[in-house]
Amino acid sequence: KMYAISISRGCSPKDCRNDWERLLTMRAEGALRPIVGATVPLDEVSRAHELLDRSGVVGRIVLDCS
Image (cartoon, rainbow, N blue to C red):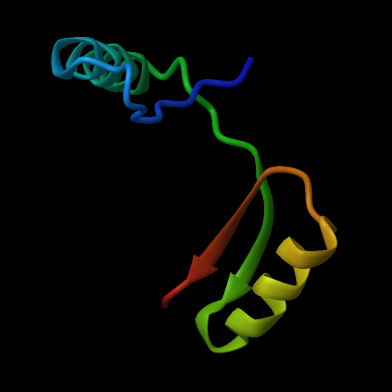
């Protein structure tokens, strides 16, 4: 499953708040497990952009700042 929140012109503040509260609850319960497709060191951020441009990764790209 995929969950996302986006603000559009038709979204009322109450609806957006309800969506955020639901997502935060799901996160706290461990129900959300993001898919990490690649971890890239911060000093190689250009490589992360290349992956995005080529659609060469499935999931999120994490920048490692350590």
